[in-house]
Image 1 (cartoon, one colour):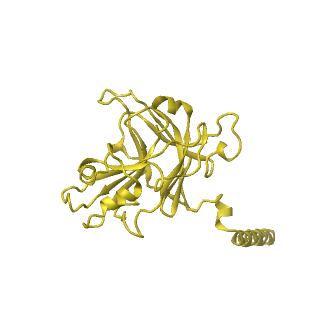
Image 2: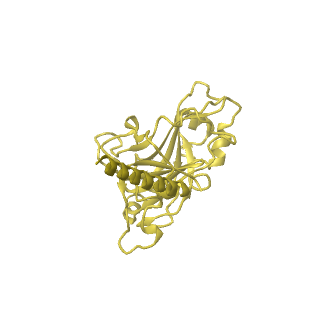
Image 3: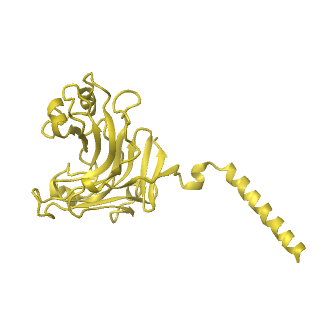
Length: 263
């Protein structure tokens, strides 16, 4: 009996060794579907969310119906960040909702300027014709960085939101290609930082103009948080995937946020 179990144990160990050797010969991406790691600090930022909007990791969306090819599925993996906000869903003024799905841990203290600063940002979006009917072609989700602007002209201002207003998606009812926030759309700063720099919601700036405005001779402006958001303005129901921040792409999947080297 012991001899039989001993033989089985050796056989199992031998098979395990072969599996380990085979696995070692494969690149890590082959074993993970292209995923490189995970980031556990993403979720709804409650203090920046108003009403009862949706920002949930989900499968798909696939389609719309009749759409085939790479535009018919999320650009990474099988899932995305689904977003739904209403334009008249609260008793507040304005009555619209706001949602912020982000990370309050991993970006704090990172610089905005210089070669080590914020130099690549963007995402893929699933835009619909209905969303355009609700608010026009630029009714789109945004990327927001909460920052310490560290402006010489406003030394007491230690908080502002740095917001990318995405351009119109080039396609509807399917997944877009990568929308580059450093070359398309516009940016603005909230509060006193927007007033001092001139990059505010009324007169938004390009990405390069914004960085030049922040580079006013003071201390390095730094990041507090990073998020994908929507509101408070028009109703929007769609999805975002492949958020890029510098050299990392954040792949929104039903089971969590995965990280990939940006290409």
